[in-house]
Image (cartoon, each protein chain N blue to C red):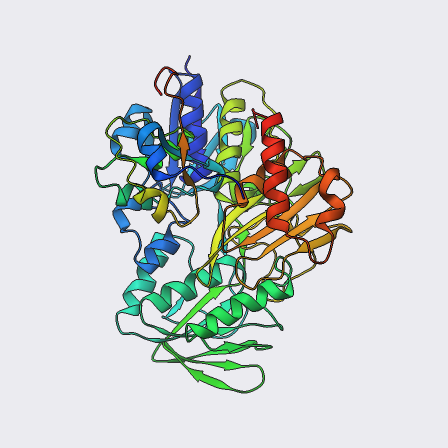
Length: 439
Length: 81
């Protein structure tokens, strides 16, 4: 009898798993269940949709023909209960669905701050396409807006609001932007660019209350007693993996659903991948969360292989994200920071806990304001890099970090205060590449 | 600095190559392709744009906000090159 695969979630991990299963098993039944009527689209692409760089229809990587080709059954609905012992889930409409193998790829949702007024109309977040469309709708009146939070999503919203002519204030609880990933100079570069774009930054500022009038946002009160009148408040203080299903079924969870190296949860035949999965990393010996698109795809593919019966271990790759911070293209690779960021609770979108596991490492950096390069230099290899502006070296650096290239020949030079990091890395990369053609 | 392949060289013998680790499937590359090649699909699969209709105009390379795409020289003497 054909295997019945059930995938809860239509994001990158779920679709990558479905595609992989179909590639290995042409006869199995694959059912993908998701709440969003739009199905699979590029969640990170919402940033470019907000700024107007890409139209809504282009956010969908798969056409109907792609889904037909994969012979996927799709169902709009929410899985509300899981019974691992009887291999069955229940949907929100009461239907019960049996499975042989189940993938939990339910993603994560924005955390909301515990302040009065978060329920008011005009308080927005950026989890999905519906949220993006709500922001765009509200921008038609060119509102006064306040953005609260940190990390990539907060700036994506700021950029989107700016592009739509909303006058935007940005609240920071601390002294600088994204303090546990960026260093001081990098934070200040981003802040300076925001100021140049006309975004007032409010440091050491915490929202105490969102003030409403007739159910709608009318302003924000800060903890030090100031009031800013506004019609829109955007929240980006981090995300929480959606673990309710797993918790209700008694699966092992911590900050996410705990999975082993094959991405199997504590229940047989139940797998988890993407934002919701907390994955064991043999290199660090820890179980970590990632909210990166590329990681979700890689995990979905490995989960798919295991669901199709091909036992495969997930090998965590070096976390990498490319983003625009106040218009400046920035690539973050490997391990680059540590500590906590006051603006975020836990993990944000487009984030990796690995970025913040920095042990003692020396820092090499160049002195330019834009086109900045920071390298985290360990004993014989590079541990991480932040590349701002010119991206010529970001691919070579990703490869050198991912392959743990022995940088001993240039290590001392890299750490010289006046080192030309770009030239050193470029020359080293040319030689290294020739000797590692497969890399 | 690393030698980059010029557009003229690519027009003679090359293609657009994606770096999937940077791609989030936002679709900007496909949107700007003047002849509607689904560049995004190539990035998902990690495959070069070998479509014989590709003009190597560079719109997708220039527009990608994440630097996923680059020109790469192909070998004329290889099958499919």
